[in-house]
Length: 377
Image 1 (cartoon, one colour):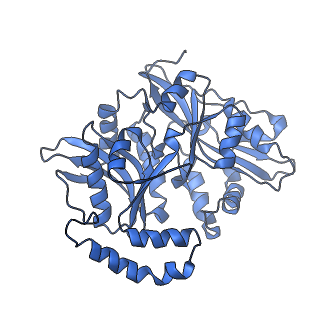
Image 2 (cartoon, one colour):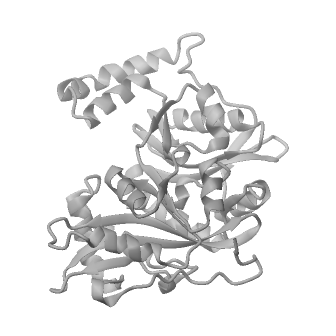
Image 3 (cartoon, helix red, strand yellow):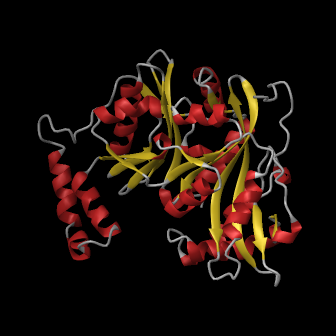
């Protein structure tokens, strides 16, 4: 396998776009049409949020590392209508100490009213023809996963498992019933009772719902600090992101726009002697579920870092925490009696280098939700 060394500049990821297929790079003038397409076909995006989606797409075009050298792709019909969109975000990663080219797919949408039924295959084939060493998508649905597999991609089952930890179980249960449209009357009228019951249960002696302030302390950390922690503690991972301060600030800036998920926070956990033990990037969402985008701990400190995350969420009034499993944290999550659910969103990947795919499959990769997820829109 020939992968360029860390001393060389990463070449841009430029797919081979064929003009006769209708596939071409995204232009800023296309964003309004794509925003309408997203609102139409993504059920989690409210119809009134077209302008917000427009803003997010515009921000995604400002990737500081590659800018227009790694284009998102659209399918334009002969009439000039945008009928397909594949969002691409170029990234740099480190594999076995060498810098490699990566690309993250963050949205894959096709107008299924279009006459051309080959649009999904054409978009994905063009994407796969690029010069990247690995491409990833951490938010594929069932149909997208099957399409990737037909086109030569594979599913990373380990990175497709999600965990949930109820902190206020009765309130979380009612939220679940409401989300699944089950017993809407119960989920509406039972909220005050559930809130009171959860509060009372935290005062029972020995109750697992009563969270105690863990050893050490936690505080907000900057993007620059987070890059330093990654460099120090993740350098032995075979595959990991090649973060720079500018790159990470850009990603965190995008994530912070998803205010419907709560307030984005980057929190470090330290000993009283100010030694870093780990960190978590998450949304504090009082009264709701806090989505965790990244969770990491020094070896042997997984439980303590997780305790700080749980205590912070409980203290801020969250009813549950949820995130994607990061392999080194799996045992600690199990000891917290988290609920595990595979396939909430699938991690799919494609590479001409089997060595890279093998590393991801066996879990020797640092791939968090910051490397692509539905939090973007």
